[in-house]
Image (cartoon, rainbow, N blue to C red; front, side):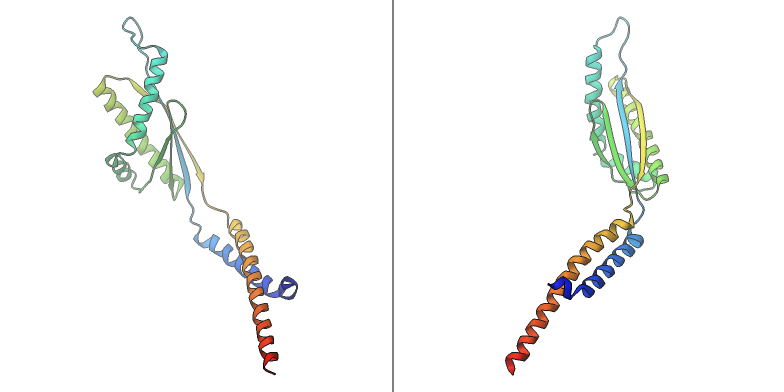
Length: 193
């Protein structure tokens, strides 16, 4: 059996690969932060005699408006303004979550940059909602704008475990190659005599 005869080579390759993977994890695993902004959009319901929309229609209007806000993040001019003001090349991913809610995700190298991007984004979105309301006579609001930041680096131990598994495979393959080479060499030597 290859493992029994070549255990030293397999062990050496496995340890070397795991150590290299661990060092790679420490040196090249850059710190990053995953940022998630949660936005809730609503519409102020008209009150008094001139009330024209039911509560259901108001919720429906706010839900449809959330799709419009989601579309704003496809506007290159708005994204460029946010990037310029935040002084960071952020790439947003925006999705709708249930009615009237949007989830915006992006990565930054530091938590502080994540906070700054969120502040600038909130400022721009609130401003755009204000412009939309003035131009259309609507009364949409942003009652909730929350940021959650979480460190997104991978622990170096994960790299070591992956290196360990890869090292076992490489070590076994190397052991098999050595065995085959020695067998061929043995046959070659004994075949000539």
